[in-house]
Amino acid sequence: MFDLGWVRVVNTAAPIAVNQVVAVEVHSLGLWSVNLSRILEAVDSKTRFGFLYSTTAHHVEQGEETFLLRFEPETGEVSYELEAISRPRHVLAKAGYAVTRYFQHRFARDSHRRLHQAVTLNS
Image (cartoon, rainbow, N blue to C red):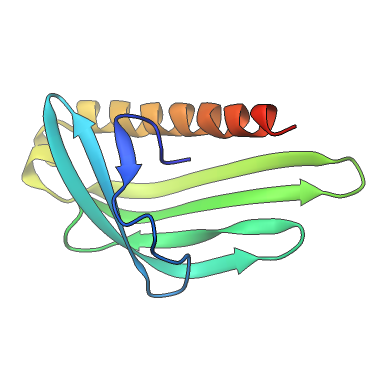
């Protein structure tokens, strides 16, 4: 869900576990940036997998994001929930609020598309 070409997780070997720091590299407007978030909750069961993370002081935004995959055994349906609650932290993110929101919406769209591709290729 993060392997999008313009977004990727830097520390891919890091476990999805509470207190783990996740480093996400983003290419936008010709610049690369790295944003750090800390996992607050992790879910790994037969029907749900995902995590909630909160941004750190080393992130252009301030807030939380939830990434959750759900499997409905009765129907075989798989769903992906991505929820973000944030506001700009960095001065450039504040100045370019509309651009920041554009990239957040682009990430959500591309992330959903990437997971759909992964499920389609593996089914």
